[in-house]
Structure formats: structure tokens, C-alpha cells
Length: 93
Image (cartoon, rainbow, N blue to C red; front, side, top):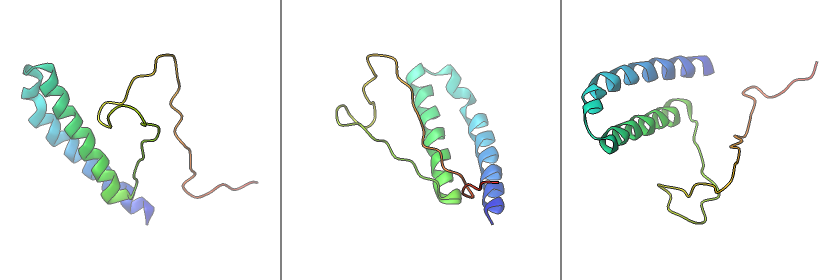
């Protein structure tokens, strides 16, 4: 059944991206902050598609200072390490 959800998400993702890409072309002529706002709208809508179709959600940790919309940038080099989870578990051979 997970292949059906993956297929549904892929179809919805590419259709929505094509629609937003077509509608968003005139935004390339607007000021940068307007274009970025449209890009954030597209990204938020793709995350909503992931949550609704696949059931995948995300969590932001470590924002004890600063606002949630614009987290403070690190003052030194850092790495972002997402947690890895196997879809079907792990098997040893």
C-alpha cells in the first residue's frame, strides 16, 4: 500500500509544481521578497502534501532563542544531520 501513497504523492507533487511554476513565472519580475514569499508558499504546500498523502511530518528543535520564522544563524560552521529511519526496518543477512 505504501507504493500507492508514493505514487499518489509523486503525481500530486509534479502536478502542483507544474501549476505553481506556470503561475509563478510573473513573480520573477517582482521584487525579491515577493518572489521568496511565493517560493515559501510552494515549499509549505509541498510539506502539506507530504503530511496529508504520506503521513510524513517534521519537527524543528533547538529554537530556544529567536523567532520560529527566522531562526538565528550559527556563528560557526555546523552540519545539519537528519535522523535516518528505514522504511521497512533493518534486516541482517
